Length: 308
Image (cartoon, rainbow, N blue to C red; front, side, top):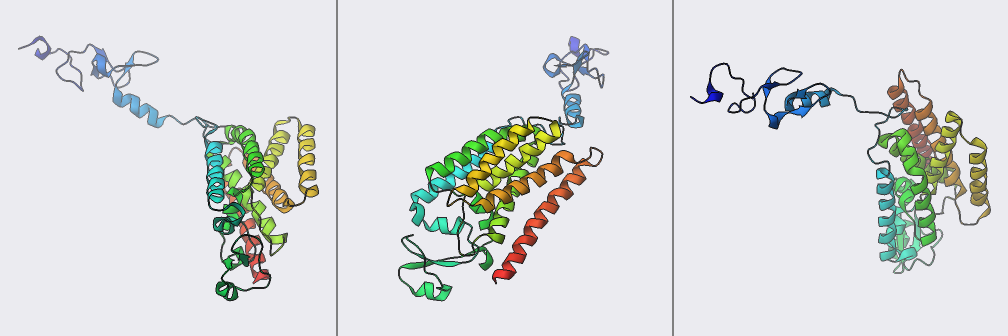
């Protein structure tokens, strides 16, 4: 009989062949050095340590979101999607890319020239299919509802994607740090959809719109709500927004509808997330986000009925 097999000698409950004179400070079972984890007082065994981790609440932001381990994560992922789409479009023809036609927001379907040099007004789907130098591009009212979202990740020129990605890189991590990953992603997507809905509702029915600027203006709106909520530099924010909107309305070829819709959608979403009462925060936030999405859906349905 060995010493560790002698009656009354404590052994590790996970390694019965090892003599152990240290006990877990939670369950008081004997543990060997391999099974010891230093605690505030004494040591804990692996099972008690795992149980404590499961019961411990994850740290959250002031507005209910989980504190992200890397506040850049979601913004980098969104930037990567924008860059990937930009590369795919330019690799397949740029302005003449068939992929561009499928991803861009077109309220009504149209017959495009195959070389991307224009389109044929009044040509319907059937006539377009018969033409050798034409191709039919569907619109949202024809059922291409995905364009409401895909257009917000679509850019063609270097300047367009550069400025949108730059603003996302600056604004995104700060808002993700405040809101948490899931809430920030909801803010970004709803802002983009709100911008698309306004383009679809009051923009040219035969036009085509692309760009992440609607979502970016939504982040600006969220920053304004956060500045008011936290009593930060509101006048400075207003000057920045005034310059951005002046540029949107003054420059040709820029969709002010997307910028305004994104700003309103982002502001409303941020108000829901930042002003929800603490007692019923999650329920109020979920209901508010659902309401913003419902407004977008109703706007799209009404406009589709008009165009149909």
